[in-house]
Length: 66
Image (cartoon, rainbow, N blue to C red; front, side):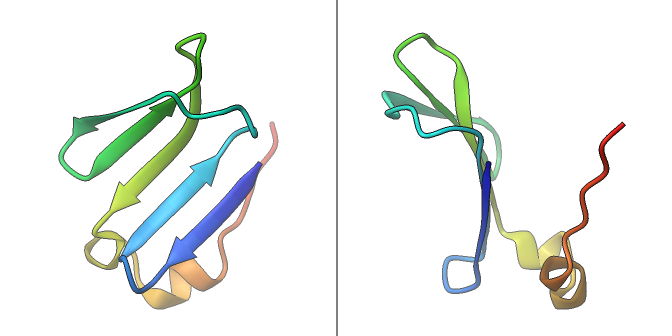
């Protein structure tokens, strides 16, 4: 899994695996899902993240495994 914060595009991207992206769909305003050839979600992009999270929050993304 890869996570990318792109300040220039004001976007946050989660890449779940390296499968080839066949299709993308904006499922909600500013939320885009990327699909592989088997219609599985392989990436999630959030646009306009500066309105959703502060620079401090984005600079220290934390993970929790349960």
